[in-house]
Image (cartoon, rainbow, N blue to C red; front, side, top):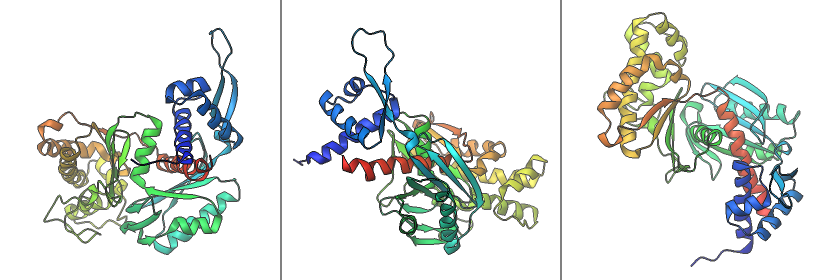
Length: 385
């Protein structure tokens, strides 16, 4: 039987209390003891430590008609913490400064650079922010293959990055704890943070310059051995299709991404499009009745339906959320999507819902800031309890 040290148990109990207050607070010590099952003395000790560290604050007596001494409400000292949320999108990046409540204090949108220029762009933007705000931590969201434990971008084709230790560069330059994860995992976290449910089972699909996904099982993100699950963008959907950036032929990304939709239109119309990665242009043509533009989205819907149908067969989630810039063109995608989705879905998964995720542009940046908040509390403060 594994034995745990007293300090390990203290950190676990501190995390338990912190998360309980974050989800249900403000709460009294008595309520914390009842909800968590920890003894009153344990709750009293840990909350006192967290108050001394400035993590928790006392708000005053609870409002109750109960006879007897009123408990003191405790809450997280949200305003003490400021985090940068950096959403590095394949086309555009969003940079937000948020407090512990995930309220946005400032937000900036900019065109994403590539390779070494991107690393320089990131550090320059962070430098501007730290000149104006006292930042506690930084959370970053990247497309591609990301290792959140080693905190590196292993490979991102669309950003021309390979084995990029961006968090180390940022931490050495600014001395601020920095955390990183896959952009769709961050989106899934943002969804859970906005609408928490301990037993959620859903898939988040992000349709942009690439096609990314995250799978949440019983309220936790399933990552796989090398942090790539579920790699839906590189599911084979068209063996006779186009060559993908990954080197394979016929990946979903070559059929349902924004760049693929532009390519669809070029092939159908015989017209070269200058904005190679901008499906918004094709969407405007489709709204104007351009048949080739409409067919470009319909083709994307076909292969997306095949891929998501097979993904649902494997994972059997409750809901599949469709998000990202391409999803804004859903009116031209949905008919062929559902046609091929239903054809490729096993009968036992027929009750899985497919919904558009009502995504605000800044949600991934906000999610990255919230992710940094969680990681900072665990790694920088709770270990000292």
